[in-house]
Length: 274
Ligand SMILES: C[S@@+](CC[C@H](N)C(=O)[O-])C[C@H]1O[C@@H](n2cnc3c(N)ncnc32)[C@H](O)[C@@H]1O
Image 1: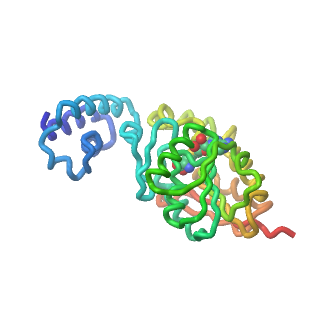
Image 2: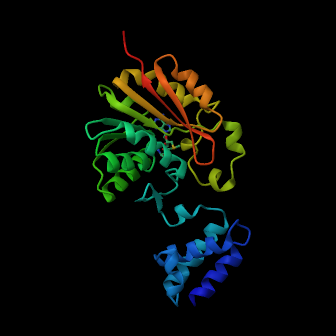
Image 3: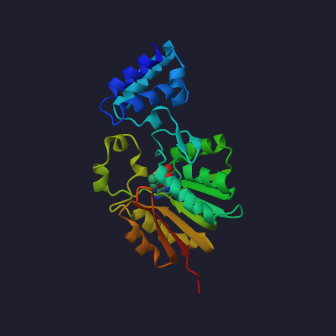
């Protein structure tokens, strides 16, 4: 099959999506393992690639995110393997890394809670060379995060752990987390492409979406060094609630918006112990 015919075929099958041409070009490019800009410099899609393309096209037409189909996502410039066991890292989360890295040096010790694909931990390690520890309650996620760290030459310690259970006895300069923060009611309203494919464990944060913040914030003082800081990604309507939770033990609480203008990051400094 000629490449332009392949793109056209995909475009027609994906006509219900927001940008069928772009989707079609991405699908062909990723199936052929070339850059999107290079798609038209190839003339033919070979028989084996064509078979793969048809399979991938059906998956995409059923709403599966492209990242899962091609097992690849890019976060902060780092290529990561992803599958349905981990959340596809989001561009908003890059803002969290960008904010936190200003407070991290190569002497810092950093804990990433709910590491998923390892996205935050890997970007922090590569950007700062700090000592990074990353945990997740999901064994499968930790396996993937380990593989991604290896592929990106990032030396990170990983542990399967329910929040802090696997890091007892350690103290950190920085705790960073993008915990599940959607409430069950909003989860039901999520786009099918998210709800039907991404892990619920990575999305729903207890009855009101704040459960994980409550647990992390109440235990964090025990795991932070003096002058330690905590950084969270939050849902667009959770800034005030998370700030209220932080006020008992933290000060200098800052709320930051993402590029879309939504509250997205909250960070704070541990209060001095008397
Ligand atoms: C929103 S995802 C974030 C993944 C990744 N850090 C990112 O930003 O792309 C939340 C992650 O928290 C993990 N998680 C959920 N409950 C947890 C718990 N009690 N302890 C540790 N990790 C948990 C999930 O398995 C999931 O990988």
